[in-house]
Each structure stands twice: as C-alpha cells, then as structure tokens.
Length: 70
Image 1 (cartoon, helix red, strand yellow):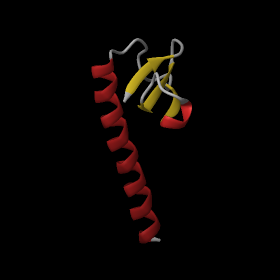
Image 2 (image 1 turned 60 degrees about the vertical axis):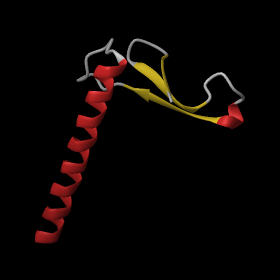
Image 3 (image 1 turned 45 degrees about the vertical axis):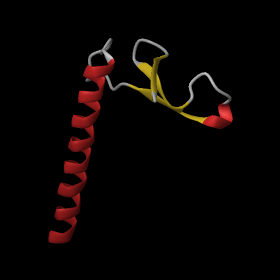
C-alpha cells in the first residue's frame, strides 16, 4: 500500500505496486473533510482514518437502533 498526497486536502491510497502497470494496482482518491487538519503525516492520518471508521460505524448503529425502535 502507498499513500500519495495529490493536493492540500486530497490524496490517493494505492493498493498494489504503485510503480507498476495500472492493471496491477487499485487507486482510491480521497478528499479530507474540512474538519480534518491538513498536512497529516501518514501515521497521524492512519489514526484519524481508524477513528473516523469507528465514528461512522457508531453512527450507523445508532441509526439502525432508532429504526428498530420505530
């Protein structure tokens, strides 16, 4: 995997060989929300990403529980 900044608030995550042919990798372009500080190191971004994932899953769980309550 590789992390490639593409702008001040955007980057790409590359899965596979970043220098190999396009057929041997997948690229996911991501833009950071305005609530996330720019210029994060890869380690800091990894931590933010994990926390954001947990936040999103918690929100989905809350919405689902509210649906089940009627």
